[in-house]
Image 1: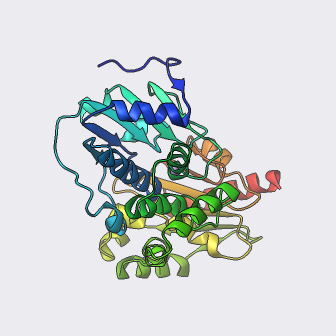
Image 2: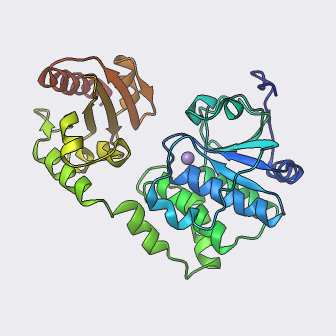
Length: 331
Ligand SMILES: [Mn+2]
C-alpha cells in the first residue's frame, strides 16, 4: 500500500465516482477527527448507498461521534471486518484523519468526496465541488446525476450534513444549491423528523454546558468599541461543570451573539497552562489573519491558534487588542 504521490490525484466527475465506488468491496469510510454533522452525515449516507449495492462498509473516525448524531448513526452497522479499500468524505487533508491506526493513516485512498477548497489532493481520485456548502451536498449531486434513489436514511444523513455545515442556513455558504438540495430532500420525504434533528443539533445542550455558557457570558470582555468580544475559560471550570473537551465545542460562537460584535474569541486554558484560542469573524472580519499572526491558521470566518503559558489577564488583553488592531485595518 503506497500513498498517492502529490499530483497523482485525478479529479473525476460523478459518473466515474459511482463506477469507482461500485468496483470496491469491504470499504472503510474515513471521516475527519472532531467529527461534525457533515462528515458523519456524508459517511453514513455513503454507507447506506454502498449497502444498497451489496457492498460492505463501515464509517471510521479517530474520535468519538457526538451523541446528538445518534439518530443518523443508529442502525448503521459499524461492524468489524478487514478492509480492502478506503474512501474519505469531507476530509481536506490526510492529517485531518487524526489518530487512526497506522494501516488507515498510510492507506491508499481510492476516492475522496469533498467540498474544501483547501483539499490537498492526497487521494487517488477526487470527486468534489469546492463551491458546495457541504460534502453531503456533493454526495447528493452524485446521487441525483446518476439516478441513485434517496431513501429515508440517506435523506436524513444528507440533511444533517447540509444543515450543520451551513449553521442551520445562517452562514453565507447557504446558497441556492444548498437550499435546493434540501428542498428536494424535503419534497421527497416530507414527514421525516427534520425539526427534531434541528433541535438536537442547534438548540439542545447539557445542563452543565448551559451553566458554563452563562458563566462565560457573565464574564465576557468587550473591546472599547464593542466590536471584539472575548470569553475566557479557566481549566478549573471544566471540572466544576463536569464537562469534557468535546462538550465545549462551539463556545467560540457565544460572543458572536452580542449585537455589534465582529470578532468573537474563546480562550481556553489547557491543563499545562497554555491556551487554545478559537476565533469567529462576522461579515467584515478575516480572523485567519489574526490566527496566523499568533502562529495558527484556519478559515476567514473561523480560525484558531495556541498561546504559551502566561497570566490570563495579559493573554486576554493581548488577544483583544491585537484583534481590534486587525479589525481596524480590515474595515
Ligand atoms: Mn464539510
